[in-house]
Picture 1 (tube, helix red, strand yellow):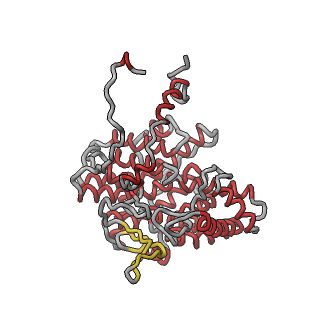
Picture 2 (spheres, helix red, strand yellow):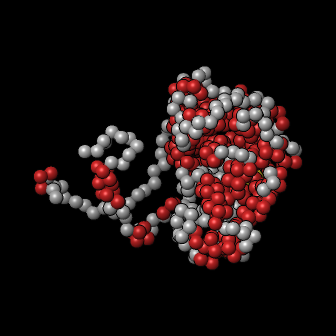
Picture 3 (spheres, rainbow, N blue to C red):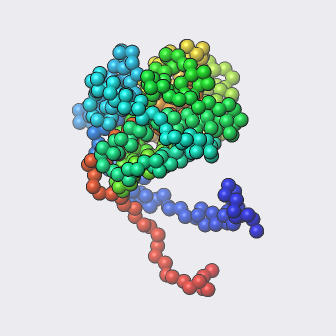
Length: 455
């Protein structure tokens, strides 16, 4: 008999039981028969309306002469076009993530004095409880940083004497604390993994009160604390663009669902982190990086578009990369003609690639983006256009910033905690009922059989 106490191994006993699970499949035709909106989306890709929000809006189509037609994507935070938020911060030569967080939480743009006070509050919360790094983060490092962050968030509950108080002032206080310390949880988790599991060096730098979120990430991550102005600005831009994306994305929807049960903030944010960890959500940029590395290995002439197209065609036909038939970073559940976040990012990516001496690689990404869109449109019947989403370029940016691959999804979480917090507060303010969608059972009824008579 195999050792069933081995927690990391699938034993023969488990393998045998798993065969029973594999038979538990529902006939795909039943979804059509009962008009089930799989993934809460209809056959045309339109999302099922399950709630209302004032936090953000995604625009992918417009009505022209009574007809709904695709348009360049637009993203609004609290009614403000994200392009304007980015351009405003750039024009003033300041960091914009903190302003964006203020906007998402409170529904208005802060004055200079309000932003200064808000930054002071965030800075004051930007520290962990005494011995937390030693006792929680360093004691049992995980190869998966998202798991480490989730464990840390749940552990913080034990340090909070008002952990289960879901009054708005207390939830806001908890949210601001988490927004402030997420960079520490992520970077310190990476340092622990790098030291204990990867046999590297251990650096635990304290954040600096006068630095922005983006600057502090680079400051506490790098051994020498050094970074360029452009690097910090680009990272700040990434945080702004990832901070929120409509109430219907998987992790924000998770935040609404879990909040509606009346649970505490730490449990709610751990659930959101669990959602974001998935490769179909926050882990998508890692897939793009791995795919692009594979393409670069197999395409010998980066200027030969026929060679690029041939290899992308193999990926589409499940003959290359992970054999899933997916060109990662292309297409989006809502956007059709363009993802506004990708368009904004792209211009800054070019500037960074020139500073880093990687303009050739940037041009290669451009070619892959354009050729992929053409191939997908030609090969597959799709109800809307195909364009690059923000994941296509974010991984490339992070690599130019010399950020470790393990931190890519945690960086998404560092940004998105702002949106999650806004959605949690909105749900507490507006709801009352627990969110419980309907599932139709299609299992036939069975007669009970005594155990001695079962086959």
